[in-house]
Each structure stands twice: as C-alpha cells, then as structure tokens.
Length: 297
Ligand SMILES: Cc1cc2nc3c(=O)[nH]c(=O)nc-3n(C[C@H](O)[C@H](O)[C@H](O)COP(=O)(O)OP(=O)(O)OC[C@H]3O[C@@H](n4cnc5c(N)ncnc54)[C@H](O)[C@@H]3O)c2cc1C
Image (cartoon, rainbow, N blue to C red; front, top):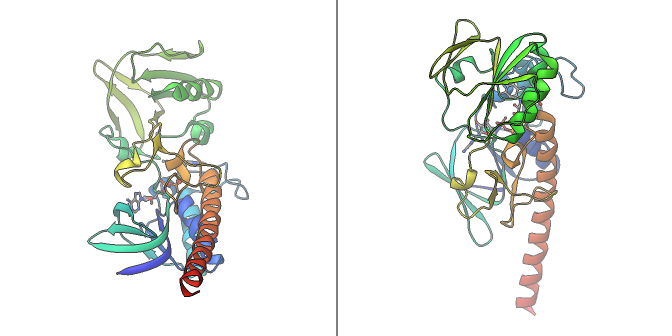
C-alpha cells in the first residue's frame, strides 16, 4: 500500500499549486489525478485573466503547469479516487483498485458536472463556456445564449449583456428571473447543442436558436459522495479561510469549495491548503511525541 504525508486529489490548478507548495516544504506527497491535468485548463481557448500571462492558451498553460511539476520532480499517480475514509489519525483512499494511506488529504477535484446536454462536451471551449467572466470578451457584439441555474447566473447574464450584442436567457427554474431589460428571457427547455466546427445552435423543446456562444452556468454537484460525513453547503465543500474542512486533516481548495470558478483563485487556495496541511502535520507530530514521552515517564 502506498503511504504519504499529504495526498492531493486532482490535477487542476488547485491540486498542482498544492503539490508545488507541499513539495517545496519537503513533504512526502502523492498527487492523484490525470496525466492530462484538467480539461478545464487544456480546453480553454484563450485565457486573459491569469496574472503574468496577459494572453495564454489553455494548452500552453497546461504545458507550463506540467513542466513545473517535472521541474520539481512531482509525479502524477494516474488514478481516480472513488472514496476517502477518515480513520483515527490517517485517511484511507480508494484509488482505482488500490488503497492509499495518508496523514492529511487535500481535495482539489473541481466541480463535477453530472448531466450534460448532448453536444456540450464536444463543443466545450468551442462555443460552449462555463464562465462568463472568463469568456465574455470573445463574444463582443455577438449573440449568446445563457442557460442559468440560479441567481448568480442572472448576474452573469447581466454582465454578458454589457459586453455582447444580445443575450437570450434560459432559466432552468420556475422563479421569474431578475435580469436587466437588456437580457431576453426565453421560457423554453434546452435539449441539445449543435454545430460544425463550433457550437452554433441551441435546440430547445420547441425551437432552434442560432447563437455565437452558449454559456452553461450550472452549479456544483455535491462532493459528499466522495467523502462520507463531509459537510456540504450549497453543493460545495464547507471550508474556512485556511481551507480546513470540518474533518481534521482534510482540506479542500479550488472550484470544489465554491465560486468564483477561476484559475487564479484555485491556485491561490491550493497554496493555502498545502500550508495548512503542513501546519497540521507538525501539530500531529508534536502531539505524538508528547504522547510517547508521557507514556515513557
Ligand atoms: C472552457 C473553459 C474555459 C475557462 N476559462 C477560464 C479563464 O479564462 N479564466 C479563469 O480564471 N477560469 C477559466 N475557467 C475556469 C477554470 O477552468 C476553473 O476555475 C479551474 O480549472 C478550477 O481549477 P480546480 O483545480 O479547482 O479544478 P479543475 O480544473 O476542474 O481540476 C480538477 C481535477 O481533478 C480531477 N479529478 C476530479 N475528480 C477526481 C477524482 N475523484 N480522483 C482523481 N482526480 C479527480 C479532474 O480530472 C481534474 O483534473 C474555464 C473553464 C472552462 C471549462
């Protein structure tokens, strides 16, 4: 069985940043995820809001992140974690067919979309977007559809209306959306996304809408299944400013802890989570040393 001081689950910006910091602090880590890192990085067409890189493609950012891992001799263990069990003073992780044991765990698994529209995955990054702040500038003067799931989607639709030419808003709930007059609310149910090289049509139950871009602003799916007993609020993991969950030794960072869904926020939180895990480990060590000396005396 593999053992580590810190197990990091997820190879997006949050998990990679956590791994870099933990390794820099000389911790014995295991980074579980995909060798292709995160599709949410590699599929991004052009990133305009990552400090230091005024215009960088997702592909290049992914390449740079991988290079950084290699430079620090951090290997990726290509396994999907299906369960994390909090034991007395360690965690047991079910990873593929194997078990991994770790003293602390950092969850950086991102937001998992459960049910997607036909065509959504195919056109993600090619006319389909999950982030208005990130991608609105690509649709200046153009027509976009917004599939909204909550109040926050309404604010994003308003923002898109300021930047783009026309916004059709498809609420996926009953309540009357509170959007500005610049947003046209359409009470139809989206069914499918169609296109050739790029997404160009949103098909609903009654009609086809020709658009230049489709923003799907879905909220998170609860990660409670991954860690039984973990407190979830609004379908995100509950953390404090130190990225501590309510399970001692378990930290979470990035999209999994809530909006805004952004690279820089995820990377920053990964750094905080790793430093908190380092502090937790030294306290654990102190407590164990104290325990041993009191039994010896
Ligand atoms: C097309 C697109 C364009 C975007 N453009 C921008 C932009 O321009 N600017 C911006 O700031 N943000 C942008 N975003 C948002 C940004 O991608 C996310 O906020 C960011 O990737 C979140 O990082 P994360 O590390 O929290 O999660 P993710 O990037 O989602 O990474 C999570 C990782 O965990 C892995 N994982 C999940 N579950 C498990 C498991 N059980 N076991 C092992 N591994 C697991 C996943 O495979 C993935 O590799 C964009 C998103 C998309 C989809």
